[in-house]
Length: 123
Image (cartoon, rainbow, N blue to C red; front, side, top):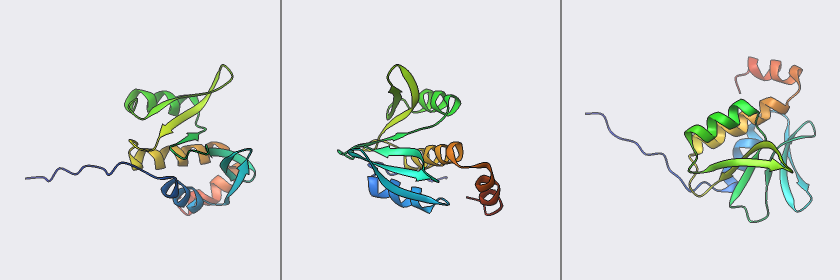
């Protein structure tokens, strides 16, 4: 009989930070009252001061797919009236989904030369 495994929930910003900082050429910097993760100066994730959620700047396809599959902890993130990514509620988020979204956001912002190099090293 196959064992049922449940993915641990209640992810913390420290978990997101550890993963984001493991990606090539990432640094963490303040962004107004938020914290931000950047690849060569381009923001791909922000952390509001309450640290109960994160903002992940993914493309339309990743956003729509994420919302369709994980509406229980994802919602559309807007800049004005324009959707720019996803707001992730960390308390109920699946860690594997959060990591995949953070990586997709990193890929979206990373320069092509860095992507090529990172691909050879399997990020």
